[in-house]
Amino acid sequence: MSHIKTATVTIGIGHYKRVGKDTFGNYLIQACYERDVNLVVQKRSFAYKLKQVCHELYGWAGLREPEFYETSEGAQLREVVLPAIGKTPRQIWVDFGTKAVRDQVYEPTWLDYLMKGQHELDVMLVTDTRFRNEADAIKQAGGYLVKVVRPGYGPGPKLVGDPPVRNPDRELLGYDGWDYVIGGSGKLSELRRWSDRFAVWLTGSGPRPEQDASERARNLAAEVVEDV
Image 1 (cartoon, rainbow, N blue to C red):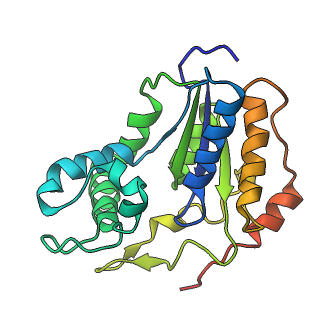
Image 2 (spheres, helix red, strand yellow):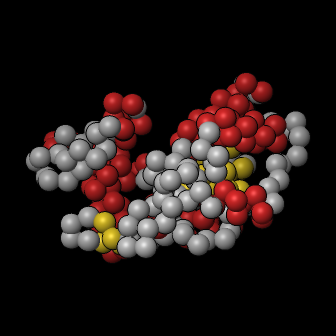
């Protein structure tokens, strides 16, 4: 692959929390680096800019910078209420990014910021693909979509928060545009195996990995969807 640094390949990874999206992204970055140190593969997020803005607005209340919440320490604090404003970091991000900006100002705000920007990358991994318009934009850009599942886990109830609002983690339930569904075994070794297969392709050492519909269906069966 020629290193032209214009996000030549975009891979969207979805679509709800605690299933291993970032873990798979990290494995893929590592696998690519081991094969080609010159290939620039990085994670990007539709939510990064909104988290950055929220930090600037609510840092006084204890909301940290986006990178902090990607650490093991920070991950444990995503669901801890900040007393000064009575919301957890995750609630702030959802309320600001979805309810305020996405729903009330301009729906593709965060999408356009990411997809229309220049990122100086060979491969862009979008590890928070949650909405149909995000999935469609990645497809329209010639990218690919990977759904990570984990046995016993799902997107949660239909309504979340207080007052209750529609759960954004459920927006891609039933979506049939996934090119890959992985993680059905619940083993990290499966995510590593898929990251290796992708790395072989992305570094120009082999064809793009294939997955048939029956395998996608088997992996989807591991998903737990609450009917409430």
